[in-house]
Image (cartoon, rainbow, N blue to C red; front, side):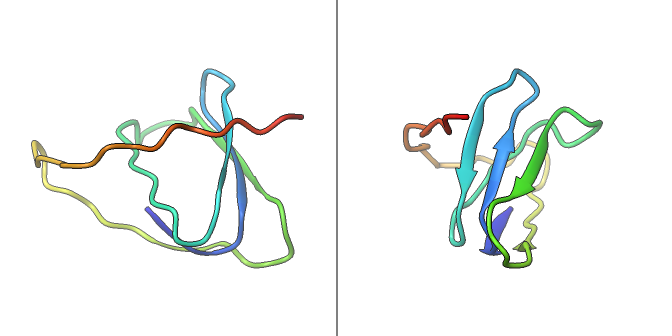
Amino acid sequence: MLTLSGTLDFQTRDGHHFLIHPGNVLLAEDTAGSGHSWKLTDDSSWRRAYVILRPGAEVPFRAKARQSVRA
């Protein structure tokens, strides 16, 4: 998922929080169920684009270290 506008406070199923800003890419492997939650942190609408990869597709991507959000 590519965030086009809006900033999210995203929480994973195990309780980790991080911010998703416009231009950030989120690769999600767990796409069924309700294992995560999010809320907007600004007044912008959350606009996003989804890219669905074929099963088994190689993803040559290395994530940057996650920055936690302090409550």
